[in-house]
Figure 1 (tube, rainbow, N blue to C red):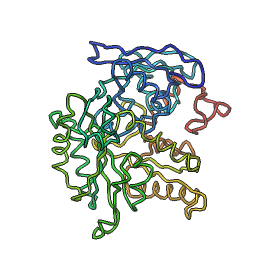
Figure 2 (figure 1 turned 45 degrees about the vertical axis):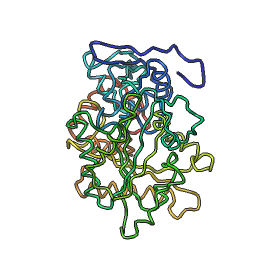
Figure 3 (figure 1 turned 30 degrees about the horizontal axis):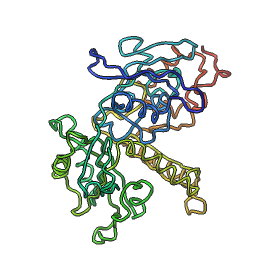
Figure 4 (figure 1 turned 90 degrees about the vertical axis):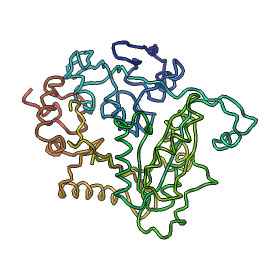
Length: 407
């Protein structure tokens, strides 16, 4: 499952009665897209939690958290790991889990690579949507298949977007949907996200590659709604046992929501295509020469692992995903300055936001990011597992080795 060289031996998915489910052991350097393809082809299984972009390494995302729209139900990727092999800053190869060496296990998960390098991870799996046959002409046409293509369609996802003009109703519906994960009696969406829409281009852009160009979202049809709109984005997985009822189940889930009438847009696509949608967008942008432009992105969170999150039971990951295009009015410097202003506003307003994928410039900023209690714990783990501060020095969290005098 390794790219650019000879692939290491691959472990088959395993069922564990003790864990009550399947898992697979994968190397830290393997890409999530390869893990997905491997587990799907060996038992029809898949990891439970994802990032939006799959061409990232397992060890890399587990060192940060790994967040996508499934996190409301399964937690981030770091909450779906049973065991790790970690090479610490002391050069020790350590196997760790919740029961064995738990300080290193929880410290390395979301630990930004400061305590060790994750070389193997035991990832929790779940059954992926199973294969679906269909001969309904209208249904086939909706996902781009002709009647002559009565072939096997695998692992399908119903992808749905709906628009709001009221922010309070938008967030209330999001929180209603994620609460169904615990209280919905099994009836829930499999993925919940959302984004702000300030112009038609933001909803019909690369994020909408799979939505039919014959049925674009026309914001001009909502002339009586001024200001920004908000787009709820959800999915429902289905398979051969639920294909006949997916329409009714989706309608029931949408029936309690308060989106603008007539603004629901749906498409059906393969499970893998949905999970790999950002890579499809990447190829599209590369073709236009727009992928390599600067992306001054900012992710904010609105405890046992090292990742820093707010203390509230319900909190949001808010992402400002902008590009500094050549010749555009907003330069890279201007967008970076806006990011700084957003952070300053959050601090002055007492919002309690924390950066996801943090980028701080000094140790005092890192201490403020962690907070006093978490910083003391993290610094203690650093002293225990990487006392010479050899790992991930470029982040500026701890003094580099040449400046150390205390260890």
